[in-house]
Picture 1 (cartoon, rainbow, N blue to C red):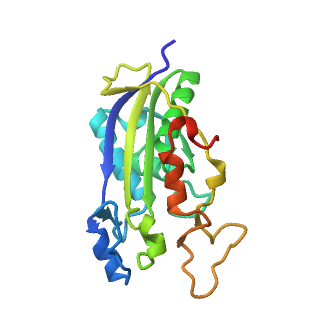
Picture 2 (cartoon, one colour):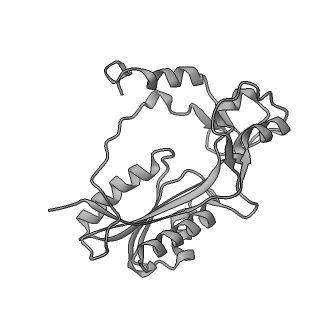
Length: 240
């Protein structure tokens, strides 16, 4: 049985872009050593994971020529949340876009590889449920968590905001723009928490007075160390 996924359509939402060095300099940082993306998208006041994600999905559905009523599965593969759980970004996007109650909405907390992981899950889910149409949405609103005035956070200055979506199917008559055959992953578990939002979980529920509760911190691992791991030849990389 062919269990590949047909890629039917894609959509994106990107808020306005800003010059990274201008943003950091305005926050008081020395930008003379900055090397990276020159521009970064920052969310507008009313841009949130669910609203940006819904905009991207509506564009993907239109690109695919697929009605929301056909969706059987919607995976949200971002980390950002409008609200803490049990609020579900996937279900909010379903409601906004008009997906039916027969569509299963699931939130995944993956990050950088969220879209690939979700494609892998959608591939297996559709294969075991008789095929149909699924959607994968990623959306992040991260820029407000970055201390643009800190050189120590330089590696995060270009982390921005936006959303993307893809509509996929298995065993349908919809024409495919591309084919997804599968993905393979490894896990570097000792890097868990390297970039940490410290407050809001069970260990540190409330930020102390004067602290930014959403700020992301580098925790104990330098950017040079992380880069060195990935610059190694494959046969010399640290085992997972």
